[in-house]
Image (tube, rainbow, N blue to C red; front, side, top):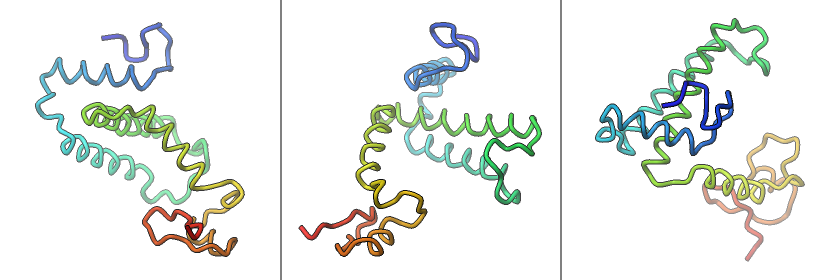
Length: 151
């Protein structure tokens, strides 16, 4: 296994999802943990890590980008918890046979269609509310808030 921060080319700080997937698979295999890495178990472990991540922000109120008022120790802890969430997500996608990189790119394309700049720019309103206030077309009642063009 490579050093903690080195990838195949020896570059520090740059890692692909494929590299993370392989590192996680090797890590689990070396420890004979594959038997425990079911989709359900990985999801529940990730949810637990999201809870730990949430605790870091609990009671802090809104914090500015870059966390300028945070101590380095707090930022390091945040990085560790973010990493835990990412590692479980990568492992879960691998176990489920999902190409996470391609799934993310596809989702971004879908979101670009679902949330057109002309309708959403500068607004935090739900898409269904935006479409009602800016168009005369009917909105779908689906959970996705997709605009129905009357077809």
